[in-house]
Image (cartoon, rainbow over all chains, first blue to last red; front, side, top):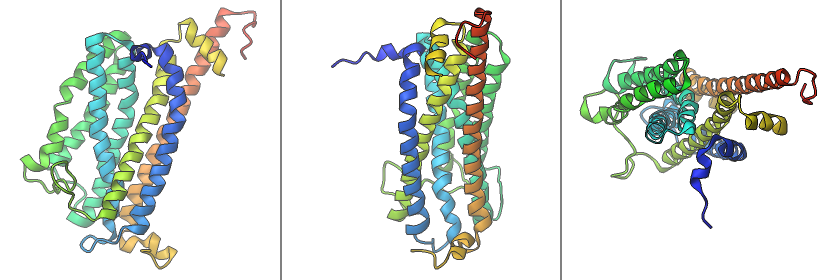
Length: 246
Length: 64
């Protein structure tokens, strides 16, 4: 049973596949989010130091992880597009960018609302916060640069280059709490040691992380379908798709 | 169960503004993104229909 993966590198064959996958990822996201929020708000106990303000963690950490992960996905697709010259790769990168920017904003916003009661300030220019803000500007820069160039192929390459150069920022964000003295706390969850938080809190946070992950996949697939139609609107198959699926 | 009453739940131990401010804006962002995506989809579909109409000026395409 050999499935030809390359077949799906063509927008024409990928379009219907993406359409079939979307509802499943949305459903998974919804189930995981409801379960995660239930455990986060009703099962996980109140923190003895931070009170209930810590419950922001269940959206803050998943959003922050997703902001970095989606950037790597976006840069990865740009790299694939530049190496193999595949049209779909840049469309995938473009489809991921707005969702990545949104999660970056959510991470910054929720972090600010968490910082005020725990640190006494909405914002500090420390390494973690500043590099995350730069991530938001990189997402916005990527989308603006692409939108500013009329020739799509040139726009793909220029924005792709920006995405690849900007990828250096992601490890900087991740390790910033180790490399510099920051107000932001270090990682509570890492691969190399057991997590330093209560099991119910950790469960809720991981469920919410999976939920935002599934949501990001669903939304990106929806968006890439719109982008495929936009870009291929001159071709016969796009018109036929439109007629058949309308 | 953490909360004695609905009021206690919404009060979030005095951190209501911060906790609900965080979740509220996150939910709003997600709704906004879905709404924007729906609009984008509609726009491209309309655009495709218009092109179709251009190709078949006599209206024989079956599209409206």
